[in-house]
Image: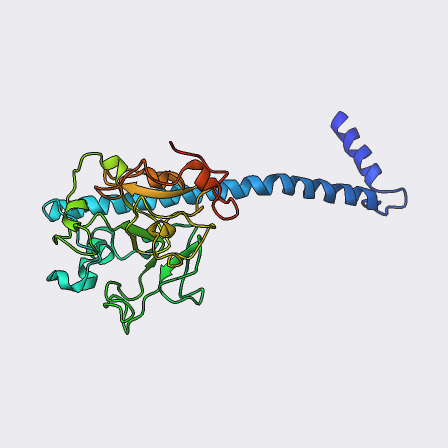
Length: 305
């Protein structure tokens, strides 16, 4: 009986005595208040969502590098613990065609023909898409290299002998990790300072593959730091660090090391890693020199003594 009374009361409130339905709308003030609350919530949530999205991309980037590290490990197992020769002058007389001895094609049997695994999720626009050509010169922090041309995908590129048509990515190799069997070129003994074989001592300090503006680099402790984030990788021919020193992950760039562990590397920490056997980690730029770079873009980032 109580339920029936409640129903009758509800109906009488909805319907007037004449049987017509009474409808109450929002006032303008109420509507403005609701809109203001929604706008406030969005302003609070959007930065948080953006940070979560960036973090997710960073995790996926490290996952890609872990996969590439495993590909290197399988390659070494199959080739007597020796790395590929990567980029070399043709006079070095490597019997393989240029693209076959470069890391991208040499590792393809181990990671498959999956272009995305060579690409950081935060740097997916290729040089070709940006109108810069496959080399991507000037593309900045969040651009990728590629796409390389040839009549058919999978063929040796007609644009660069070491590339394969349709390839792209935003990772590059530490070219000092290469099995170059020559004694002298560029005025230095490459045989002595390259990491030619796996299982080396201190492998967790030797970068293997990571965030890059190009496909490879030969960093040295004498390299200058970029004057601004995203500086073109060919802008200073004397600084290979310009290819990798960039703010891609909030003060860090992701790398996998020769022990096959992947982690974020601080932009100032790059000069503290053993890129080659002769790298002097105590002679790079000082914290003050980093902070004075260009407009001070490196100043907020962590120092490494």
